[in-house]
Length: 302
Image 1: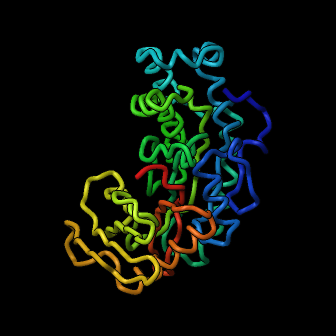
Image 2 (image 1 turned 90 degrees about the horizontal axis):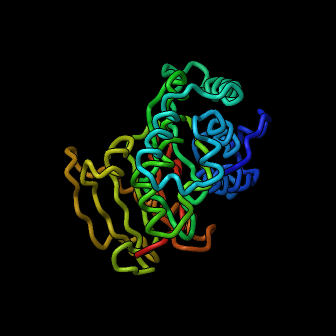
């Protein structure tokens, strides 16, 4: 478990491509920061670091026992007590103080005259999340379309999801430390998405390296990622960009992506794969001004 810190500066890292270390900001935030460093467009945002998580954990009842023996998380009753305590808060004073300024900065970066207030996405960034060995895809919390006032409670729920039954089960099956090593939390401006897409630069079923598979649905995409709707599924020949198979989803109104937006997404997929030097799984949101990358991670399984 990370050592608690009283340094407010260490509790926040901006995702601006400066190369913050995964040990400070977790896998998802490190991936986003890497995308920014490569010049790809991500939503503006910051990360509450692993140190902020440790600061919060230090306030929990039983924190000393957890630090001494992370194996206590194998006990559902004791784990439930920790989860409840984390979710109920409040934020540690140093964490609360560190959060206020970055939220004001994001609000100040809205376009002048914007008719919409700042809406935010709060997303987990565990130490092992989105890594080459394990993705933890869908195991930790993401909350979308929040106001600034709703962020503190969402952060606490994200942290608590580190110890959810499904996350503990995943670590147990893979022989990973049960405490997860800590969790950072990404806070970003919400992309006003026309459509959302999940794309694989290697076919996730057949393993074909010469095909890109795109799943796409209208809107923010959370229902698609959660399996609540059936997305459009499009298989593209990677070298030529030609669509070789297209299966419509269950959303009304025709295809989620226009021909132009699909071409742009395929180009983006190739560029991310080239930058990462490996097949990747990306999530992206289509805004009126084009695509934004929400994450990119190495494909860990067929």
